[in-house]
Image (cartoon, rainbow, N blue to C red; front, side, top):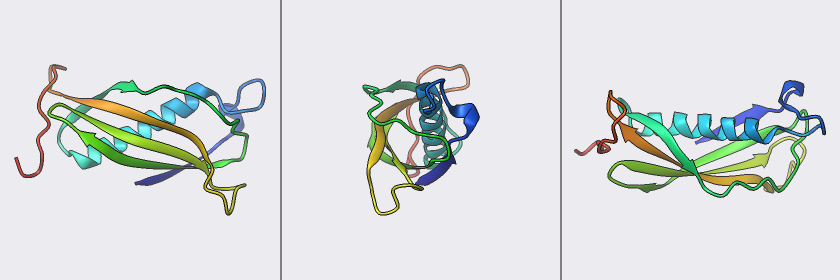
Length: 121
């Protein structure tokens, strides 16, 4: 699944680059949409992101492309790889600006961990 966001002035820190927390919020939101579409009718909560490292500043006006791919499904959890690249200024470049793995756990109506129901279950 691909998704796009534009970096607006309200998203910037006082050095003129994207707040790291805003990028993490977008990664969480986009991966949550993906897990919700992959497992309809089930409820998931974020349980973790792997090591977070911001390697490149992201500036105002940049259009970001988010690629979200499922990489592991367990009994109660699922993990996605999220890659963020620039889609506006690096026309012929596939430079990854940020990359992370994010994991979700399936929960019941009381918030307790529960088994993921696959379409064949």
